[in-house]
Amino acid sequence: MKNKTLDHIGPVQKKALLSSFIGWMFDGFETSALILVGGAAALSLLENPKPEDVRLAVGAALGSTLMGWAVGGIIGSILADYIGRKRMLMISIAGYCAFTALTALSPTLSALIGLRFLTGMFLGSEWSTGTALVAETWPASARAKALGIMQSGYGFGFFLAAGLWLFIQPFGGPESWRWMFVIGVLPAFVLIYIRRDVAESKLWLEAVAGSHVGGGAAPIKRKLSIVEMFDDARTLTHAAAALVIAAVTVSVFYGISALTGPHIGAIAAKQGLTATSWASIGALIYNGGAIVGYLAAGFIADAIGRKPYMLIMFLGAIVSGLLTYVAPQTLSATLTCVFVLGIFTLGVFSWMPIYLPELFQTRIRSTASGVVFNLARLVSFPLPILTAFLFSTLGGYQATVLSLASLYLLAIVALMALPETRGKALPN
Image 1 (tube, rainbow, N blue to C red):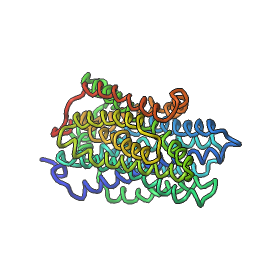
Image 2 (cartoon, one colour):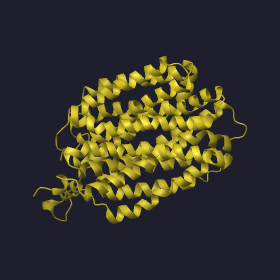
Image 3 (spheres, helix red, strand yellow):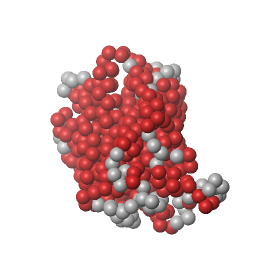
Image 4 (cartoon, rainbow, N blue to C red):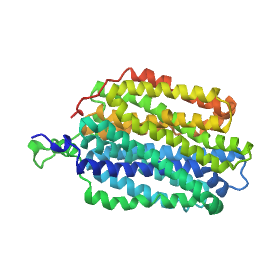
């Protein structure tokens, strides 16, 4: 009998999307809060720091979060293929709320860096779980659009963090950064809604039922899902090519975002404006562009296909880097470039929730998507630290942004090894 929940959009689909959207929104809030308050936290926790000490401290905290995200995301995505999408979503939200609360109490920089690693472990598992839940619940005709909306939660989270920091920072004093992490505990209340109202993915339940002899209670011994990825040469090829693209996507974003706020602040300061306020405004503009990219992704991918959409976004990222390189270093011109960079270097993340679930079977969907996304973070975690040195070597922000955006040439090459999936059912 055909599963009617996959043929229309009703309460089941809307609740799955809402819970995943909120979870991913606070992932965005958490990550962007660290980018925004990292400098203030370093100044608070270090004694007489030099500017290079602050940059290194922020890079180390971001790198630690990325590494934790990679490790926890891989573990959590595997577990979601065994214990279910709903249960793993709840575990990930509960975990990052707990460690976010502890981050607010960090007594030293080392403690902050360690707690960001632990927070990242739970942040990482939320994305692949929520992506699988939405992809397996929504009908093919609306799946890409729903996943684009889900991905936009990250941008709204970043937008929320930047707006709150703009308000909190002037009044909270040198310890105001701690309040940003206190606010990050709020998703704990969402757990009540998820447990009560969100349904488990029926595609996953059917796949689990198929792992029992004759559909009965006796389970068939199952390979570890990450091992199953290597059983099929085509699946392995798809995962490897997608990993290259994901690594470029993550690396470019974190490299650019680590430099953009301080750069805008420096330009504003030269004009007699408040550097910290304009750095926050820059973050708002960057994520305003990202939200445009997120929300447009599903409509474009459905209209012209997944691969053409991705190619446009990758070329757009390179062009936005070139635009930044040649633009005059005025505040208005820089903010315009930042908006365009937001569309193509952060809004481009929508390719992952839209495309990755369509490459892999239900039994390994969360595992494969999570491994690709989070291995990319593992590959990229040193970049926020290295970007500070790249900045010095290349002579400034503009050349660094262009060099980072040029990495999308690798993504375009890797894209050639992947299939078009528009209009096709999810692999079973």
